[in-house]
Amino acid sequence: MDISSGISGILSLVQIVFVVITGIYFWNMLKNQQNNKVSIERESGKELEKLQRLRRVALTEPLAEKTRPASLQDIVGQEEGIQALRAALCGPNPQHVIIYGPPGVGKTAAARLILEEAKKQLLSPFGADAKFVELDGATARFDERGIADPLIGSVHDPIYQGAGALGMAGIPQPKAGAVTKAHGGMLFIDEIGELHPIQINKLLKVLEDRKVMLESAYYSSEDAHVPSHIHDIFQNGLPADFRLIGATTRQPHEIPPAIRSRCLEVYFRSLTGGEIGQICRGAMEKMEVYLPASAIEVVQNYATNGREAVNIVQIAAGLALTRGETKVTTADVEWVVQSGQYSLRIDKKIPAEPQVGVVNGLALAGPSAGVLMEIEATVSPASPGKGKIIVTGIVDEEEIGSGQGKSIRRKSLVRSSVENVLTVMRQSTDIAPDDWDIHINFPGGTPVDGPSAGIAIATAVYSAIKNQPIDHQVAMTGELSVRGYVKPVGGIVAKVEAARLAGATRVLIPADNQLDVFQRYDDITVLPMHRLEQVLVEAMSISGKTTEDRHPAHSTELLPAPALGALGCD
Ligand SMILES: Nc1ncnc2c1ncn2[C@@H]1O[C@H](COP(=O)(O)OP(=O)(O)OP(=O)(O)O)[C@@H](O)[C@H]1O
Image 1 (spheres, rainbow, N blue to C red):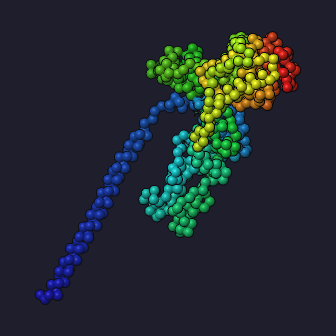
Image 2: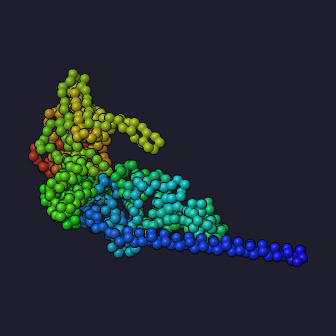
Image 3: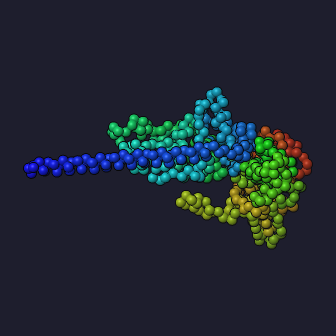
């Protein structure tokens, strides 16, 4: 055997060993892959089985869903608000809307139903498949890096999206947000006042453009690997033509003006005890249980809104149903209000009889929640020109503009109103307020502020000094200028409504606040006031004559100087 044949033998052996090793390597690799596949399939099989087991479990329909209003007619007490919603959204040119109102009075329920109502209209642009998309402004936080934004949408860049096919190929993927999901339908943003200012700005841009433009540093219009639909999205935007319904428990002035100016503003009001009772009876029927009148009365006394009413009925019904009964007892409801620590609801009513120095003022307890607010004044003689003023039950000082980088502290507006009242009296009347110690009180435990109590404060002080009672069936609201003019105030509809619900027969409002809708009320007369003299005549005329007797057709002309001879017209 020569050397060369020995070498070639060794080489062949090495080759064989190499081939065997490579073969074993690939065989192992295949086996591993096979094993992986089998274990993934086994794992996936187990998960699927778990999922199917979960899907087979179904509880009965929750009582909260059973009691949810199924049509706009089921929503109690919000006729005006629903009419405004219909006008805004059910016509041929629907508008964006913001619904203001206290919590739990039917804002969400109405918004959820209005799209279906709109679809019934022949000229409505909403198609049969138009979607209603909901988002909660309080939880819809966006990511400042733009990686996730449930409202506007975002781009999953390859670096974040993992090893999917498009990610591997380095292609950014646009992800639609709620504005695009709502395209062609309605986008409902509950608690819209809680959205971050940047989100509001982005939303405004979408409302303006009716589409969303998305950006990514990973996108190149030249890249031939990018699929055409992604080119299309980056170049033309994602469609986002929808109508916005925002709901908020905040006051209108707390909502950014830019969004307010693009929306029709709709107000839902707080519910009366009677309306709470009606909601209670509706819930009872839907839950197929029975509550005696005394139990409904307990709910009426403790629930301050529709949601609380329905919750109390649900828990009380739960107690009865677990006993195997469908009759809910008054004791069940009492137990729920005690254990739930509900507070007794106080529906403010007008006083039983005329009193000296006590006047029914009107205030706002929310954007569309008016309340009757008693204002009382007492006086005692002081040394001439040395009288003191005490004002209690008010906000002393308030901070405004906080949270927006700048805040200022200002003196209470009620205190300013008191000073205006005294100026008017000093200048134009035969009474000298500086000769009296005057105590003005706003009872009720909730500090009040705002200028709209001006005419009420003046009436209370005037009545106390003159020792002349004020008609207990009159309520009033209006700012008083230092020259004795009655200036307009906010929330007039809610305030008139509160006066009406409290049992007032006449309500005095600034002439500039007069609305046609007030003519429709048949249980209260709304009288427009220009000057304080008119206010005093109306407030202190308790001879039993009606307003019609005194001023036919509710004349808004300036009255002659009042017989009271106190305040002169200027
Ligand atoms: N006016 C109403 N008429 C009938 N049911 C009502 C009314 N208001 C509230 N409810 C009941 O309370 C539930 C909750 O009401 P809804 O969510 O509509 O209130 P909301 O005003 O949107 O409150 P929030 O501001 O807290 O979201 C409803 O599903 C309904 O069962």
